[in-house]
Picture (cartoon, rainbow, N blue to C red):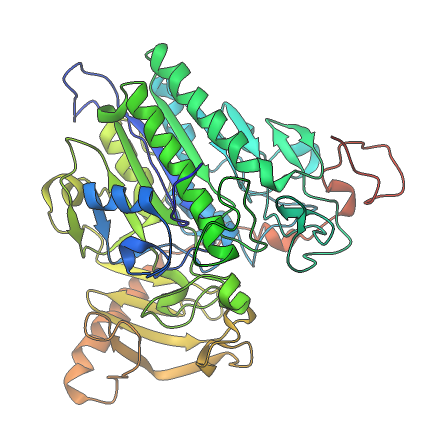
Length: 504
């Protein structure tokens, strides 16, 4: 696990029916998903001290995106949209994120990328952070959502006390206290707790070894595979093992990013060693923007405004790289694209059937293989707590973005820009704020007062009206609340909880 680049989203795709390889195999897919990695965090996106050689190599030999978006500025809704190709408002993954004892989860009638691929004979696995619910009888774990195998922590690794846990060897404790009053962080193997609390310095090696074995085994079996690797890096608290601790010029954040990058490198090497390299589509991205409240222990949004928790560009525009040797030519694309577009693209590349529901994604094949235009005309920005009352906070059409509401977030506190802070309360804008994101990606210069942009504002309003007219909000799954009895415990009958939940 020694490849540097946090927001890694690798989709290894075995070639499709209508995009056939020389031996007519289906492609493999590897999806790398970094956690809280910002637009400016990778070396290939301009950071001067991040050590991300593996991700940088993917970028130099693949297609790097400049205008790629997640669907939400926080974890759970962003992950739901990535896997289903649908805005989180449709599936009900709001408001905010799931906790260890959450009653709800990603509804089982939602169709994930894994479930799209299973009928075609794909082997499917996830290593890392699920964060789409555990629930009663562990019903929402990934093994009930199309994945054959799961190794990981089912939510954020700060959702449990961490002050006594080791984050860096030999015994450097985690920075901060994390969430108190919850069970310690469990490591799951499928639906069984393997270790509680998890050993964070040893975690990445476990993931890297699992990924390598999964790739090698399925290549030997000549079975197409989908590997989803939603990393815990670079979410707070930062951690790393022996190989990368204190090795980065960037400090703890840089060490964690370096470790993530190392795992990416191990995955690519496994593809090369198993001779699956040229038949695998790898896609990397991040779940949302950086947690600026963590200062130097958090990420960097580069030139973009604000970060995690906000609907400014820094909260939702993320790095992304598509890599497929011999199929995707190296370069840079400015096409408007999103995590929502991955499921339709995978379906197109494999000939798989699309779910019979309203999708919000578009096939990216023309962009990937022919440098054609994007089928996506607009990007819609929902806050962390979307509601039918307020609707969309912002809409981007082409190069222009209109903000109908703005609001800061504690997750973007500490920056000099007061618009980012928790104290920047919900504000409605009429007329909306208008920015030219190609000339002004930092959203500094409001164009709404200029009469020549009246037609642009009307076009965006028309697109907004049409989209919201077709949006049906699903039942709020996070809104179902929590039950301490549902928190994962390796010794379910022990007392007193949560402190007794400890197994090696």
